[in-house]
Length: 161
Image 1 (cartoon, one colour):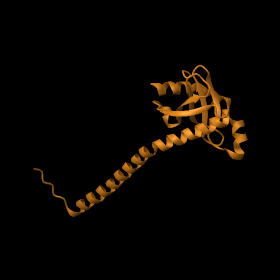
Image 2 (cartoon, one colour; image 1 turned 135 degrees about the vertical axis):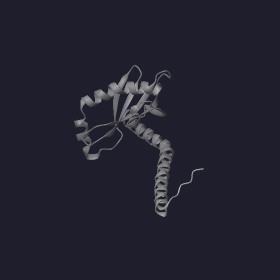
Image 3 (cartoon, rainbow, N blue to C red; image 1 turned 180 degrees about the vertical axis):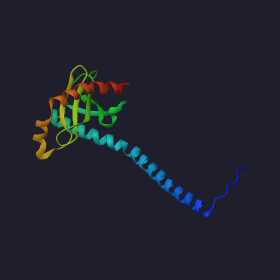
Image 4 (cartoon, rainbow, N blue to C red; image 1 turned 60 degrees about the horizontal axis):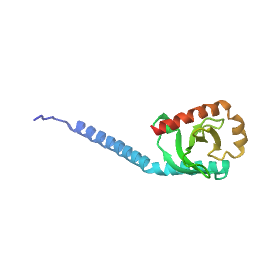
């Protein structure tokens, strides 16, 4: 049996550091649990915003159905939802993608529609830019749109893996 002799100063320092690390550990557990609890609320809020943009884009033609899990690094800046199109064949698949796009005002949430065999189209922003909406639309570079139009099919492929 190992016996360690500690003086009062060492015991005091050990107690202080133990309390400090206990507080840090406790706060970490609280933050992680709050993140896990709020995940569903976050997904529902994004689905609501995608539906709102789609309603203003094509007047209720599309309905957001469910969230698709992303298995890529894009999961931090994009969300994919399956869409159902009214008066369309059931075997056709449509997807709504909300991504963080750079703009003159900073990153803005852009919504795209992807239909298998139909390509990608930009539906609009999931935020009201107010007076700056004209500026944002003018400053939206075709390079940025082209980039996301190329990336969205790849993102959706990753969600099916």
